[in-house]
Amino acid sequence: MHEFINAAEHSRKYLPNTASAYRSALRLFESELSEDEKESLDLLQERLDHIYHLVVGKNNQKMTMASLETYRRRFINLLKDYEAYGIDPTKMNTWERKVRNIRRAKRPIKVESSSSVDISSALLQERTEMNRLELSLRPGVKAIMVIPPDITKQEASMIKAIIDAHVAETEG
Figure (cartoon, rainbow, N blue to C red):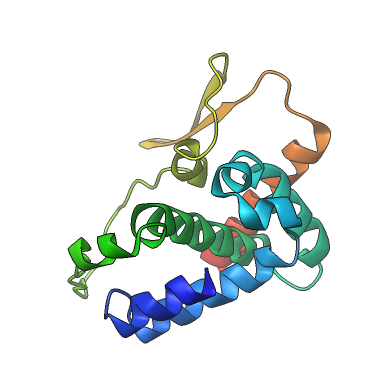
């Protein structure tokens, strides 16, 4: 995948900072991949949740959960791009990268963000039985969680750590 990132940067599909961010995410996840996972994109996507848990376990003392979640999102985006344009090099020519227009707002904009679980759901097999929890936090603000009925203590701790990291970022 390193060659894919280099080719995408060279053909101006990735800006240099995007390519650098994807290389960092790839290095972080690559250290936890088995040889089989390095060879098979399908196997890698199937085991992505488990691999992410290994990355978190190995790096949670060095990085915040918010940073680890950012690396996970970057890695998932890289996998999607690689699947669409990296397996068949001729598809790279048809790749039209969206250019984002970033505007500075004069006042904060309220944005509803979806969980990163939504991003990975395309890569991972969906569960049919999920518990949906809607919590009213204060007037006009609610939290929505979709969790499996057999959630483990470790998974619940990871979710709590992600929420704690987000709270620390917004209060700071």
